[in-house]
Length: 268
Image 1: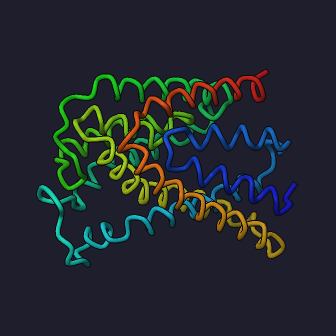
Image 2: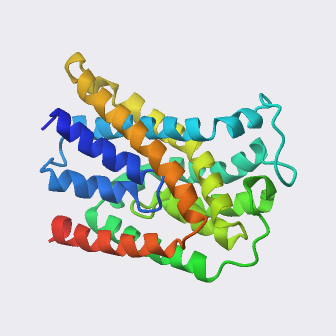
Image 3: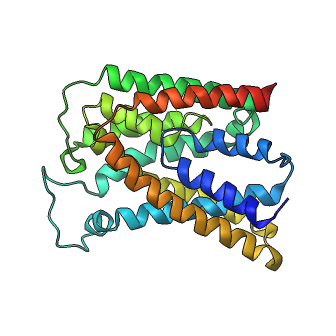
């Protein structure tokens, strides 16, 4: 089942969920099940890796000015504080990359089952509510106000996202709020640190699956990549506006509903 409309649907789901705190893994499994795609379809698994790169590109487009400033390639000065720098990024991503590398075998063998993803969906929703209810006084209204300690704390929370279903953005946004960051600062930092983490993770998986590519699949992959990029671009911009006005608890309630659908269509 490698028709163009399948590429569009999966691309939309990936673009919508990669950056939002709702678990892209859970949604991709649910979508594949509803489309009747078997777990043994290795081409689709490779396709899902490729379209993640489309979502990554969307993040780069949205935050390109901040990314240039990280490398000293922009004259733009921080709006507040001393400014986010590469050390903030390293403190936030190294713990997750290290733990993911050391446990990758165990994760693939034991944590990618439908039941563990369902648990991740539910507990990730609870974490979002906890982040809202127990957020201390906000000390970082913008990413440029984040301290190194806050960046590292967010990085520790990101480790939880190794468990499929928890959601990388969900765990880091909730962790950021618990560290004293505003919703917007936590979301911006989450999306920025997602770029290197996703590049490393998807790049690693892509290199392992290069033998799955064939010239006949170029169009299928291209459609999914473009759709994922466009949808992710819209999702990030819309989400940043959303979090400035509304509680993250709404995404928690959505996760609970998604978990119910996951149980009905995948586990039963």
